[in-house]
Image (cartoon, rainbow, N blue to C red):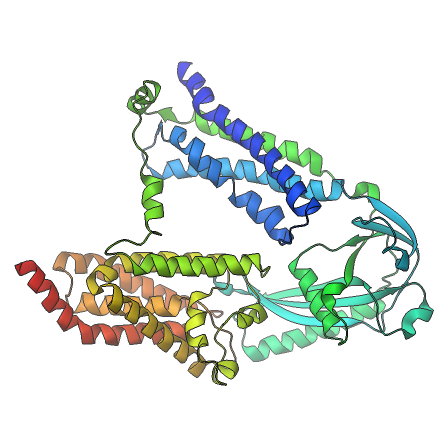
Length: 517
């Protein structure tokens, strides 16, 4: 009984406080910063990614030290308890943001579309008289690649239709108000380019027929589209017409349900999901026991110094023998954050946006923009892409940078990165390529050469040679499934391996001299 009370007091109570304070606090900040102050951050980030990611901060700071009082046969179980706590907080927070947006929106009734500028600004509008012009439309065709290992090829068509006062206004060249309609379909990214083109043609023809049959004038009310990636695509469609800046236009989504139903059951789901999360976490705590020594030390004030987080953050801080790797990682992270803030997305970025920021693309690179051979190595296609490369770079950098020294390590990284980029544009005639993986594969190629030529001690070589071969082989095989720039991977790997062979003799002499001293 005492143990259960200790769990309730030391772990469950802080979890409850963190959960309630985070949900209420984040929702209030959302209202103040992104609704009232209109800070232009993408809705997907505000409504999903920040509520999902930010709970880890209070969990790590306040709850994690208490969770470490529990006894685990496997230390990784401690992370599981932290992760479940974060999910239990994140889910109701995400639902709360959706409820906030719909609940505070007011329906404004206007006679016709031109009166919107004269009425009070709101999110929802009801029109008495209007005409949806299906003849003078704006269209944007695009594709995206998503999924683990870029397995999904998404075909999208964005159609923007002018909303006018009456049919007589169709003679006017411009419209400020548009009704947006999106069509989409997903196919496998493993298909050949020709198969994708054929699929897209069939998709476009089908949606054209569907568009012609649809009566877009039947809706209950209109909702102004927020700051989303879809909104950006509609803006591009309108800008493609010429003489019209898409960013100056207002895009609406048609809603066919009664306005009173806009909230659905979001409010019930907020409390329901929070209750389920609390219950799950309580049951989870019942299955674990305290480490008696740690608990006694904690109660008496003799707590162990928690150095785990400090050790993690030290990977991002340049040190004497680990100087260049943290700088490269930090540059990649900063570029990624800048692209997210610029509104390009989070999980994945579009090819046009990557190209505008310095991606590698043969027609542009060979036209004189050779700097793209370097800049693309500090860019990534999304969060998972960047995370995977950071872990790969950390692993190999820990061993290679102390061996090579700052200058030679940086030269190997940049040289193999440039050669990997060159291999990419040599192999692919028109593919947008980004990522540090070419340079990282270059480091692994160098690492393999050093292991095979026994630059490292024998025990070290046996331990890491097989794991490195498996890592390289697995990634190259995954590249064959499509959606991955294997040319850059192979170009980086081979160039790094050759450089490693050339430099291995010199490195062995250096190590031998150090051992003699």
